[in-house]
Length: 365
Image (cartoon, rainbow, N blue to C red; front, side):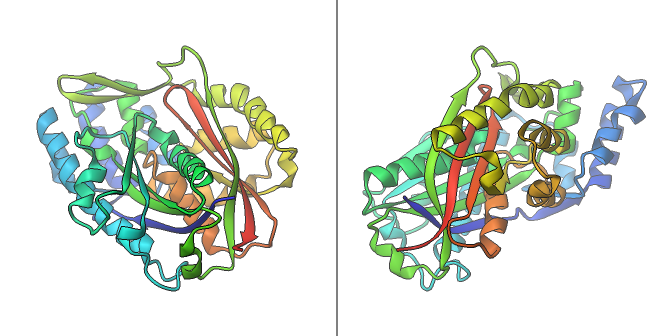
């Protein structure tokens, strides 16, 4: 059972409170809607108080070409990832001593908010002393599901190579995709919700020599994972790629889809592993938004308190797409857990799809 032994998060340098972004949206969208004040309630009702962005507020006041936005994405994402990786490999809360970059066997780089070939992992390796033989596994297009998918792929890698380890790096600079001339309701909702963030998770195999560097006694081991695709659901969530850049696709039906589809999906996954939902004590859920969290509670018949950590992340960071679930995981890993407690990581993304990861808190052998 591969284990997650360190997690780190990075906050981009420009925090904005929700009131400031509401005023910006009022100015931008007012001429397009007679009922703008009613629509702006999405900002106040979304349970978000602040978010962090990679550029200052005045950047959004001007038009930017796709090339300009994407060049900035590559530059800033590379820089932010370097800082997050260094923090993860020497996180003194989780590790006794630094894990050297050259000892990382694989980098799983997750992002959907910009384009880069060579991918960001290659650029990061030019800034940090990774081995030139480190395996590069970039994942693109998974959106909000990407964090859990990255952990799933790390689990599979470390199952196949139990002496090795994998570093999951999730980076999304959603703010750089902002379309100031798109006055659709989807863009208005996206403006109220999305933010920037970076997070890393370090996963080791059962026989990894790096286990001697781990400080925490009780850690989440990965028992199983499941990916599920809903056929012919491309219009639920994702990007429309146009000459001006990436335009958000965000269906208003997402909470209803979750209520109807996710419950049986989770039940099936847990039954395969001979576990009931009532045995889960840690629900590590990607907080897609207030209504998404409410849909989790309803369809999975959860005690609402099980979503408190997800709500906290949403309140202070918004929806950062793929890194968000790792922000939730970090908070759970900072808590005290008993041996053999079970956890479920869940995230939903374009496809429409779900990524589920079954965890068990255990002493590292």
